[in-house]
Amino acid sequence: TTQLTAMDDAMTSLQKIQTACKPMTASIMKGVSKNDQLEAVSPDIVAQILADVLRLAHSEDELLPLIHGLIEGLLDEVTVSARGTSLILESLLESRGGEEDIKAQATVLVGKLHAKLLLLENEETKQRTLSAIRVIAGYNPKAVVTSLLADHQIPYDEAMIGVWKIFAEDTELASVVM
Image (cartoon, rainbow, N blue to C red; front, side, top):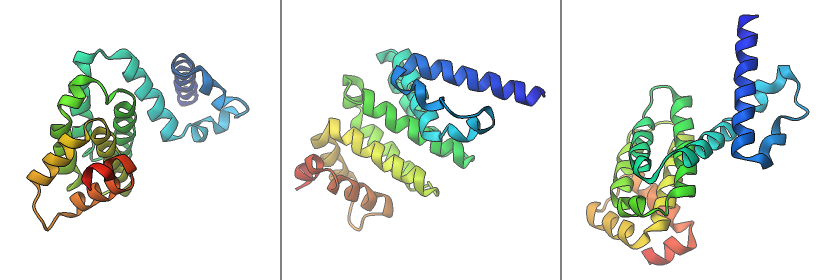
């Protein structure tokens, strides 16, 4: 009974956060029975809610250290945590990656993400990390592409091949590369 009460409290808290962050998504839990609520909350939804909270709660001065911390979290031993971190990182970069501090650090961030890619084993975390690189590069494409070309020699490692492939999927980035 104590575990059910704790789960109910957690679900109520999640619903309050979700409602406060995104009124449009408050209906996600409607029609879902109490027994099925845990399965109804996907990691994507939780990550989006957390990213929204972090986006709203952190000032520009706090954002860059948070992003560096999330990058370190990609190597968490608990695979689900690393995947969640990659979801939050990608979402946070999509919403605030255009801020000057992040754009100015784009080459450093991409370099750190590349280093983590070399160590990641989970495919979903790798793909989200590649997407985070694409997002960062989208805000400062020339600097990122120039830096990658200068810092990495042929033959490229598997992570760098993934970076170039994800750039090729984005027409704007592909035009900078070409």
